[in-house]
Image 1 (cartoon, rainbow, N blue to C red):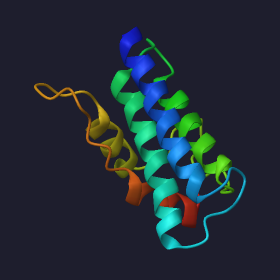
Image 2 (image 1 turned 180 degrees about the vertical axis):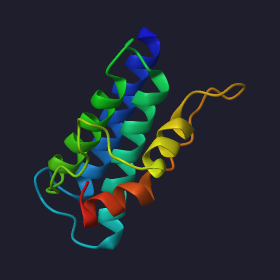
Image 3 (image 1 turned 135 degrees about the horizontal axis):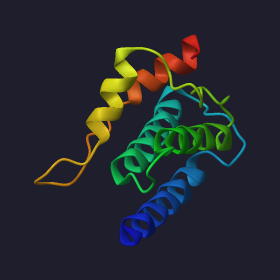
Image 4 (image 1 turned 120 degrees about the vertical axis):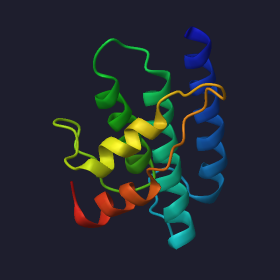
Length: 123
């Protein structure tokens, strides 16, 4: 599991570094493509943390913190409620899809649409 966490950190640093070239930290996305890039990175960070699942308890809360960290870094408000988890079946299904599944051991981080909805309409 420590290898997965190192890989998560390395991948997130690389993704943030690449996005920082388009959107400097603290600036808001300038257009829809930049907004989608931020939301997608938030969804991937969230999903990867859920997939790795390093703790016995609290992984969902930490995943939501990661997603909000990405949002705040790029000038968006924190849009995912930490506790209690966002209501509704869509969030539960998205989190479930992020879980590790053999044989690929890669989650399906399809929370981008859900995260856009939470950003626009609130938690």
